[in-house]
Length: 242
Image 1 (cartoon, rainbow, N blue to C red):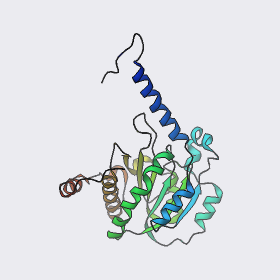
Image 2: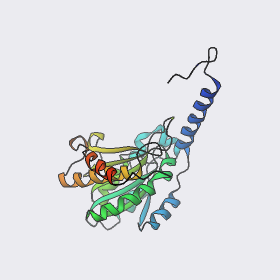
Image 3: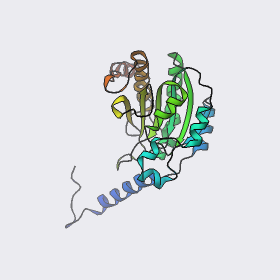
């Protein structure tokens, strides 16, 4: 839709709307990551969690050096290496990514939908890790250290002008350092104007089940969860985001 014109410029409303959306996106990128609050919320869900950090020393390092956000710092490596590595199907990582705002808004609610489904499917969750300064690939190192068959990473996506609080879920089978994006599946656009928690949980759960069954994720695992979601919609309308 055209924005209109006032002389040689945009109309005042269009300019103000753009300025507001840009400010919200910028604030989402630079928002503080409430690790302690997430750990407390995870405890309320019955999850014991561990806090780790990437090699990005601060937010500026994180934004300027994406590579630092893909590897754990030494103390985090030592912490996870010292855990008892019981066999498990999945490890769950909650990372701040490029929008801590999205994580605070949606990660716990989505996890509340996912965990009962994993339990019903007999999928064992070995650990929940809260990661600061995280890029998606940080989950590969975490999953490898924990000996998980698959890692599920919930992370804040790059803010757009229409959605500064979009959450993504990334799934990687046999996580290890060096995995590529082609070896992952992603369920994205989890926010108020995007996927609901029920819809997102259905897609993630389907991909986890099939990924574990077929021993693969990424381009070799096509998301065919849509038929099941359509059946669910005929039974009950999807849950709306608050």
